[in-house]
Length: 90
Image (cartoon, rainbow, N blue to C red; front, side, top):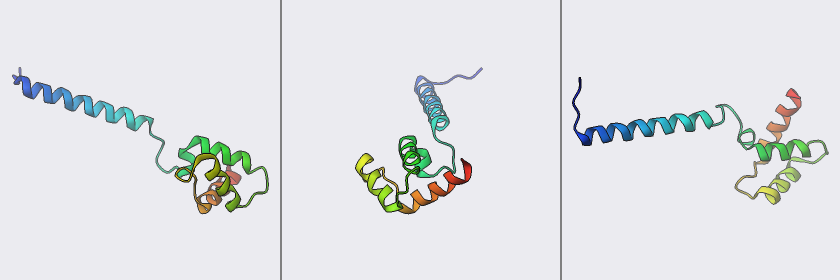
């Protein structure tokens, strides 16, 4: 049997809650190794739909900025890498 003070017991419970929340957050996180585009499903779907046309990387970047804003819009290089992977796996 172990005897703990109320303060120590409260700290133990708080730590256990913190660890549980971290594990839940880690389980919901996208797998490691995904590109920034693959982590944002909405941007990825938007780009896949636009790949059917013959738009340049710069035009796709401009469309992403207009649709999602500059913060979520990937760079031209990221778009080209994503397009290349998409062509390889479809």
